[in-house]
Length: 411
Image (cartoon, rainbow, N blue to C red; front, side):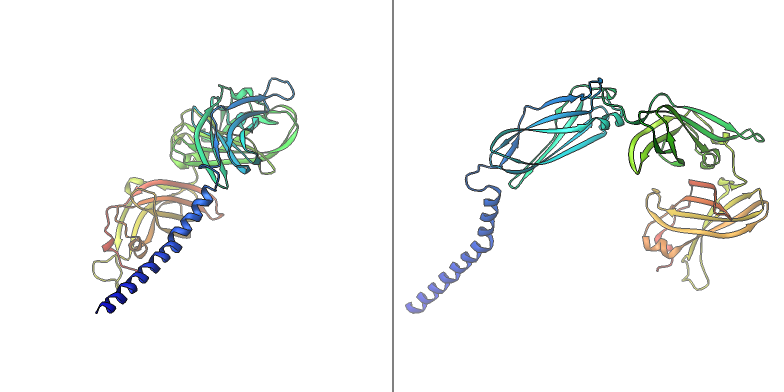
């Protein structure tokens, strides 16, 4: 009896021993190896850390009173010699826009070191935001990882303190309206932009006009050779595209100058127009009308289960002033107007002059698959002529009645 108990005791002891051995190899040994990697022998904690005494200096290489660069010196304390990665990012303190970043991979000896980060003066000039600027830093190495946001604040520079761009938007922008001789409505909204060129070159100029709510209206782009000196760019935006949006002004204009795909100068926003009523602008020959009379309904087919809709129909009205072929495309969104559900279209069809009723059919199966209850929003309604030109559009002008997902036929 004693022998059996002793054997059982030894068996349990050996079993416990092997369990502890497995735990050691599976858990503690890898952990010790990881800890050794993070904190190798002879190194107390991280191998490097950021210091406190930052410095800065502006570089005016040609003594013209303008800064080509801003150098910020970052202090680091190196406890183990090796290769380290330092990333510095600057932003304008006033409105928090990003200015630029500089990174360096450098081999450093043990001890306190100063690492210079050189920020290009054109980045400050292009942003057109005054200082002070704040620096955020990331320091990484084999066994080190440290980051600090807004660790340093520069002096209060003005963006004009930095070197001018080779070509830049300079001076005050202004607007001019061009009216249609017959209707006296605005046919084009022209924005004139003064540009200063230091070196003659070919530049691509792009401009966008949008609403204050960031709804895109129109864009103008061209490539032009600019001689050195004072120049002027003219962007003429379509009055038809402004009018069809049915959004009153003021409007916002953004401008970008590029060379071989590289941004030379960009201002966003560059200009804010005066207040306009969208009815001040010329309208197309055909357009969507009687928005208050648009209706929607659920429609069932003969083969659909009782009480189930196979599609949602939205009836809209189109005023045709010129006989021809037109097509319509529209999208259905959820109540928030953010999640797309499905699309519908009316194929190219010939219409006579006058008012026509158009039916948009949205698939009930697709709506049911989304599982979203109504009401739904009709968005991005576009009218095209037979040549494919956009002649009218509505961004967000109709909301259906409330529907339940269970009212629709399932996929």
